[in-house]
Length: 183
Image (cartoon, rainbow, N blue to C red; front, side, top):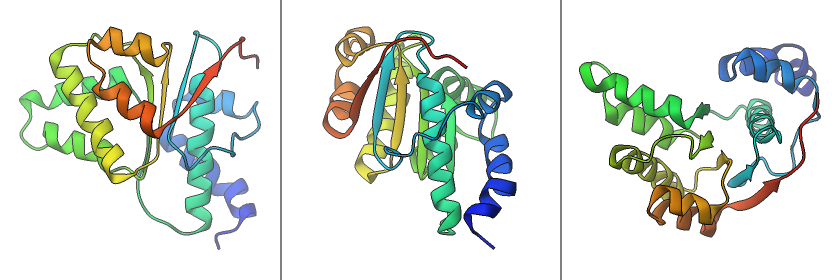
């Protein structure tokens, strides 16, 4: 039976363990859910240690709860941008899992969190990869939460291109986190 009690007692932990590393799982237990923005595109930026990643994870978990209670299907994914780039680079010497498979995985996810945008070196390959994923999601109206240490102007300068940031400006709520997160 799919009800809130079953979610809280069984499904929430199982879903969370499949999405997040242990450190985020631990920290999620110490905060209330951020449920007011879970269906919208959101760009969260601020200094290191302000709780951006944790807020994004909490929003994704709230989306998972909603989908569970309504018995809706579709992948919900959480990844850091550097991990995403490594996953694609890992396909270079493989036949069974291609770059296109990875691009489709993240482009087609029903809800995606891209953590730490801007922490990667902005090569042409990285730019193209990020643009493809963000643009595909933008065109398909799939909710995405992106975290970064940089505001959008700084991000555009860092990337040397404003195609990605222009899509974010157009479709995302922008949230600036300040202060330090405390357990």
